[in-house]
Image (cartoon, rainbow, N blue to C red):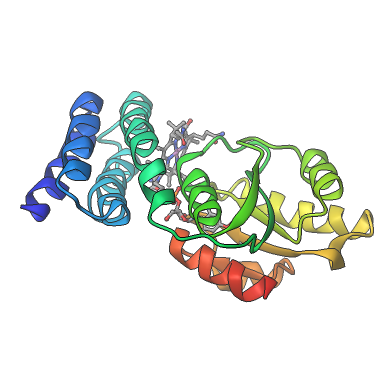
Length: 214
Ligand code: B1M
């Protein structure tokens, strides 16, 4: 029954039926399925197919927009569930997170922010298309010990390097750890720009964050 629901959630995203995505996500929550499984086995595989069809020219931008709206509404239902699964006792660290300048991909960054918050981090989520100056000034203002930079485009991943350089110029690079993520980001890239680590997904981001600020 869980497999069937996950598959129907994926299909609803692929077929551009955001209302069904939300309704099926609600049913999955009510059926007691793990919220992270709903994301990883239902929503993400559906979005991947939508992305592949876009890349191959079968789908166009409106298909991406409709699918993203379904996923975002489903994530709004899941966020409180994701948070309530964690037994948080103390603040693990302070994180500033956002999607870099020129990039408006929000869903993965928000999932990482939610999971960090659910695991005891105090999270300042700056949103998407965040300027380098805003990242630097928010790190100063909050005294954050972790900065999370998300980039989904090969054209915006270079901004991650610019932000790390700007932190160094501002004299605050040593005060915090920087983690980078997003579909095009690899360990090699993270190493080459002087990041402290990279994660493939939200669970990996939490593990990395905990390791780095311990
Ligand atoms: Co766009 N887009 N998009 N898009 N979009 C991609 C990324 C793309 C791979 C699609 C494709 O061609 N197959 C492609 C990039 C190609 C490239 O650069 N190599 C692409 C393109 C080209 C574009 C536009 C340029 C299209 C156009 O206008 N012609 C345009 C760019 C706009 C801009 O940013 N300036 C664009 C626009 C959009 C929409 C606005 C329509 C929409 C985003 C809506 C929104 O977020 N509100 C959108 C979408 C939905 C996608 C795909 C289909 C799905 C992204 C997503 O939400 N995935 C995507 C294809 C794909 O990825 N398969 C695609 C689900 C999410 C849970 O995963 O975001 O990867 P993800 O996050 C993961 C990990 O990456 C990681 O953990 C997350 C959770 O597991 N992670 C981190 C992410 N951030 C992290 C940070 C960390 C650690 C881990 O530490 C800080």
